[in-house]
Structure formats: C-alpha cells, structure tokens
Image (cartoon, rainbow, N blue to C red):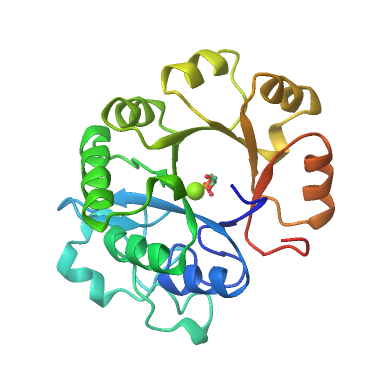
Length: 235
Ligand code: G3P
Ligand code: MG
C-alpha cells in the first residue's frame, strides 16, 4: 500500500466519502483511498461515516431513514463548500467503478452503525464481485471485529485489523482473520507498540495524520503509512 492513503477520499480538500473526493484524491496523486461503507435500511450499500445525516449533508436525521430512491434528494457537498454543491451520497457500486477506472487502491472500511454484520458483508462482497474490482488493489477493514471475521470467512480478499487502541489480544485477532495489516489511531499508539506489531511481520498504518512532521516521525518508528485528509508533501 502507498505511504499516504486519502482518508474518506480526501476529506480535507473535498466532502468526505463522495465521488468528487475520490476524483480529487487521484488528481492530487494519491495512490490509495480509504472510504467507509454502510447500509441503508433497504439494504443499499453507500459510502457514509456517521449514523446521522446532520454533519455531512443538508438533511437531518438517521441515514437509515433514507431509502435508495431518496439518495438523489440529499446534498452531501454543500456543507463542505459551494464548489461541491449537489454532490450525492454515493452507492458502493458507483464508487468501486470509479476507483477501478482511476486505478487507485482501496481500503474499504465496513461500518455496521447498527446494521446487520452478515448483511453488510454479504452485500459488500456481492457488489465487489459485480464490479469486478481487482482484489490486489483492495483491503477491507473494520472496527467491528465480528464483521471482519465474517468477511474473512467468506472471502480471500485481504483484511486489515482496525483498532482504536492496540488490544492485548491483537495478535490472536489478527491471526483469526488472516490480517495482512494493522490499523491504529496515531494518537493512541506508542513507539513500543509499533515495534511489537512490526516485529510480527504486519504492515502498520495509522489514522488520521494531517501533519507531515508527525507522519515522518511515525514512519521513522516503523509505521508503513498513514491515513490523511490531505496529500501531505512527500506523497
Ligand atoms: O480506517 C481508518 C479510519 O477511517 C478510521 O476511523 O472514524 O475515520 O472511519 P474513521
Ligand atoms: Mg474510516
């Protein structure tokens, strides 16, 4: 994976989890992006981070109150800047097609946010297969460990363990899902933990790092790359 991964597309420069953000990430030279995927109540997989619409759209209330047909009515760009007015909440299939065409790598983060783990996993796998997204450019992660177990049991797509803080039993968890990468919160990770993870042969990525100085410090400790809202200078 590249050393700087566009977080939620490129969230510092375009509205998060949108097609515009993914396009901009590619234009700015990013080689990989991370986006969040969850389900509407009708089972449609969409890119979205929060449980509620309030922060990142012109609507209020729960994302799950929306149906597939209502996606067109939601503006997910204006809150960020008028330049992105009319930007929609993308369906996963649209995003995968775009990322495939742009030739980017993708870290797809499964956000259950109250939906069924197995339904999310099943729907995501079906969409990946329909789009024919290349597996060598795909890495799936989740804070929801059961979702990750379910995903790894049903697929040979690469998996990364995503933790807020490295747990005591991280290795056991990583082995259970055949993880190739470990993803940690940069603010809650010590130099010693970085060494421990690296000594076991895992690639290690930290979120969310928006300072080039901090990114360099982490990489100096052995971190392989960072999730960033900005391209950072040495991308
Ligand atoms: O996957 C890395 C990072 O995106 C995890 O945190 O809350 O931004 O999805 P969050
Ligand atoms: Mg995420």
